[in-house]
Image 1: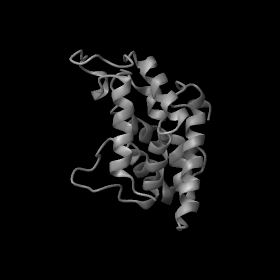
Image 2: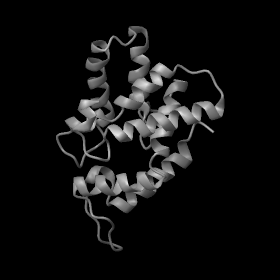
Image 3: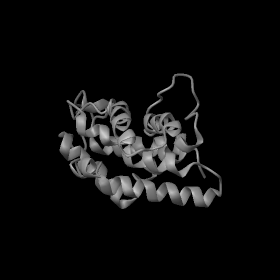
Length: 178
């Protein structure tokens, strides 16, 4: 938790707590048997990679950086070794705006669905919108552009308003849970 407390407020400990809370609500709502240990660990470690980004405008690497961090953290807390790879897969898959396995229709692991959907769902509420605006400010993105006024880069998103639309569209398109 100390590591997450050093993160910007859009990817901090409170965000991880909200994602875990949403994942639990989805699990209860679906009434399915899943490994909550995997989901719990992945919810709390899915965004730690943001702490290690060299360029805050290029966010594509954060899931892989989060996996590398999880590989160090989980053994230190005596997390069951037989579940670690499953946590790493869930972390790698958590960003619904990416297709990490070419040709795959979605996360291969059901537990990853809950992390992905909870993280994306967290964007849709008032706090989620505030997170996106905060992240846009931290990375120097403009709130919006007038038509034809574009800035290249910014992690593939031109501005904060576009990022919000992209996140919501990704959730609608890739949602795995009910």
